[in-house]
Image (cartoon, rainbow, N blue to C red):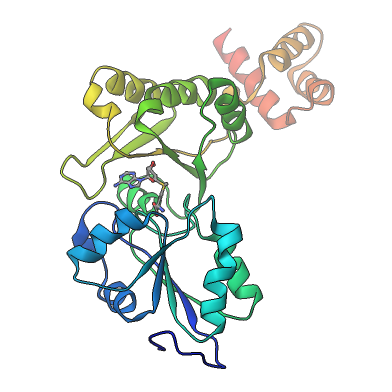
Length: 290
Ligand code: SAM
């Protein structure tokens, strides 16, 4: 690792360093070593990060790298990297680039042939998923939803039938309306979990169906404070008669009055596009109920 500002023909390394999301003990030994060894730390908010570095006795200089200057100022960091210095990128909390700045700098560095090395650590979505008890083999991260109801519901509609576990970040002052919109779009019964203030004193993980979760948050204003991640179980295709639309059942019932069950199911399938077997099962259930 290169230290100080000496020019060098070999480019330095850009380290993408995760910092804690609350509990400072979550910083890794490797993160501390890298932050202490690099020439410069590119930070989302230098004042915020100065407190973190001070806590760990690290005196490496800081320079701002936030969403407003990242594209333009990236060249400044790149020049230092190309001059042979190592630079660390950090954000206010957790893993840089994950709903945080850093994407442009990482892209520019890679395009310039600079080695980009991750130094992994805390990340709120992964911490929440690891303790949620929702399927974790496949999941999607949607980041922050639009702030207004119309935009938020439109985005939720796009993932309404997504079978993988859904993960969202949300601001505390919008958590209630967010859960209410989720209930409208995904349905009252869809399992969900609110992970709030992870790794901090008031850490709360509450798993309930959406309607109950939203009522629980509405009833306790403390649950509308702090930082939160919302996880929602993926969509499950309805089975049996629930998978057959009301219109398909109406067609089936009309045909059952005119012809034998098997023929009625086959014809209803052709008319409605619903699977023949599902309609056959629905017809059988109707016959048994009669
Ligand atoms: N880069 C961060 C990460 O790796 O998770 C995320 C940064 S994003 C600007 C901030 C959002 O992350 C918060 O609004 C919240 O949704 C989530 N978050 C961060 N820290 C959290 C915590 N301790 N508990 C719950 N959610 C947290």
